[in-house]
Image (cartoon, rainbow over all chains, first blue to last red):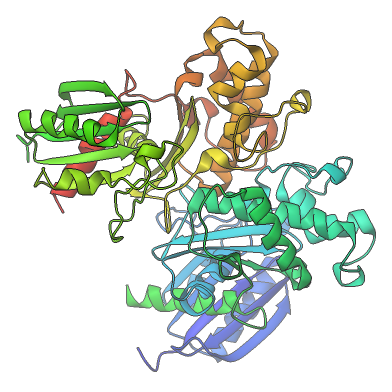
Length: 293
Length: 293
């Protein structure tokens, strides 16, 4: 399999990224286009892979999406607010034109897998990857398998404790207001409270204390639920570098010595794959895994 | 393996239960004794199984305990408040006298496994089992494997949202006060607030609304983290039958239509194995699994 070419599709809510990589998961070709109408968007995907043939493709999709390969609806977008995409089966549509092995999971599972095979968790047997950005999502891996039962996880909507200084904020989650992580710790929640974007706010702004409190709870709950060997934090909000230290310190305060964890500087980390490339690497690796089945 | 005899050890913080069962996981002999000093207690275990020889034993232990079979400390009790037991390797002690396959996991993982192989989740590929009693613990199974990375889960200490009517309660968790599930939803938290035990309190007492709110969050977060096919609620607090309906209703309110779940009456259930026997069945099944390796 050394000379094989692999494909990656990041099917995001705002953009699609298609890429071709080698068996070491290095990108050789890449194209980015906005997520438009389903038919037109998927035609662009097929066009790219017709021009750049690959042996197999890994797909990380926005959700909710059916991720069970045993289901008749495997690859179908479920109850998304993006109405045009609701009910669209990405995988089935691509299969009509691409007679190669395809594997589909959630976008954040792809990112987790990328970090697991070639990133921050390359020497681990387990990890949890979170993206904290426009939304919040998490993907957990144990011994190479994604954690998820009858469907995929939705970790960004777990309930957490409110910060004392944040009691009056109404939150931005259309389903859970200020009760869930996405409601109070996503990028839009920051904008809603301050009227500014993260990069415009000083490091000593109170909002960072509040966000660190929520993200630290997210990490602590992941530790308590999955006991992963590493927790990786990606996404736009995490691009404020000072935030990581606040999260680590708050994690230790909240845990209060209860569960043993490795050095937090090793335990809670940024993605090791640069340029927001975790999902692409993950998709290449998932394509290779599918090919080798 | 039809005529094989299997052993179960429930190594609890207050009592030990040893049992012998057949290959259908029916109990044939059982003994219960209080958890005393380690040496004396483990001698009673060895005495029982010397008198009742079995082919393999499954052990569900109180924790924290090393559960990784690859670790040199596999079977060792870690930083428990029961100081006499700290550092005691239950598995190694038993191995010196019992030259048969032994498998050890947490007590709540054993209960989860019992329900998975012969209880409420017998037709599922995944489940989460919670005990809500003196403490709160959870065990998750996916495709027959326990979810846990470098160690086991500690789901009872995850952080959740405080109920508006419960803001002033200080909680009973020595590590997390009223911030974690065990601090506000365990049996002792009920006693601390009301001065009474659950069975003495009327169904319309406000405490049930509060407990249902926390337990429903626990179930919702499990759904969002693991997407299990079923969530099973056992333990002393759950013996108040009216509580289950309150939990199901609150779960639906909190989810607010966000994630799809099956009918909550099928999704959130009591253990199907009667007489608090889930862990014993689980231990028999784990013993058989170890034997067949």
